Length: 117
Image (cartoon, rainbow, N blue to C red):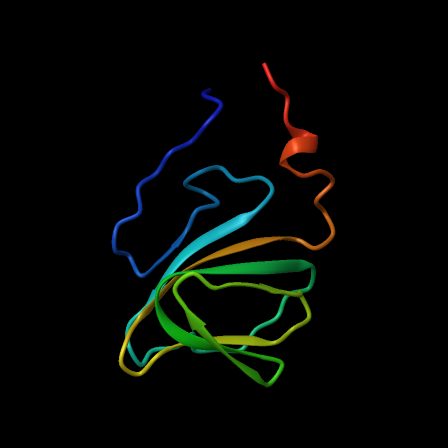
């Protein structure tokens, strides 16, 4: 078995990469909401924090009742217990990546974890 996995993302609207890439330490999804659309539910997590990176477009997220504007280039970390819901702008869609990992599980950063050959 190879020490890597590769996939290609098309225009599916939402793609979860855990199965496609055989992920074992993170959940990653790519999401597209058209103008005026939203994630149709408020949610939180038991153990996992989420990091959202806005790839294109604009919209907003409501976190624990606070409305936060989002635009391409923005990154947001959300603690597990926070209640969240995402919305595209009325006049423009939004595309984002969501990276979900267990809170406080990171034991080293790239330089500490790297083996240089």
